[in-house]
Length: 308
Image 1 (cartoon, rainbow, N blue to C red):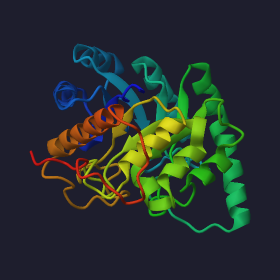
Image 2: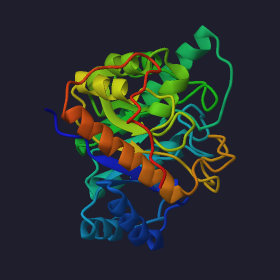
Image 3: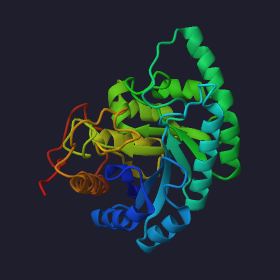
């Protein structure tokens, strides 16, 4: 029986940007809801202090994962923004090293929400630029024992990398040398014919996994086939954390690009609590019996969110 995966929650569930003043309250909530780590966004330099954060998380018995935010002005495919974006990514790596996070995850290619059409030749050139722009950051990360986990986004948020196959193709020369993949169940649900098979295709390159409901709300009670996704993660021997990533409509950096226009749960606390309860329960049930992938869309009636 495999050990259950640790669960994490992104502070974007509650606040944006994260500040030092938020840390104690959010760490206490995460711990109370059953999470083992906080996923911490680096929206801007100086939003929160790594040294302070290490102390707060240690006091609550929590680990950390670092994510980047490719907001306005961050774009490796834009000549005018590339140098500043590379400096920002090096900073994210430094923060990850200070926090003991093995990865920095995010869509590290262009600004989230920037969309444009590319013919095959234009795409080939863009991928060439991306590889050269990421290479020194990958080296910087690898030297510090950190992996850049590059995240495919859905077609409404980027033109560059939407699928696992595109990510593997674009990043091929860099994979395993400071670069891997971050997979998000929300984007897999939109872009992949079979999210479970996409996970298997990504295989050993999966370095981070983010989860949320198919509507960006709580995990569970949605149409995602969660048993099949966890079985696929077993098949590739992924033993890392599952981190819940969702947003409030007040998220200044990402909410507009991600089209978060309405509340996704009765409260943000309920979104976090219900997600942790569902994932803990599903992992316990899978540990107590044979693991099987269900048919697409099939659901065990136990795998629903109980009203709180």
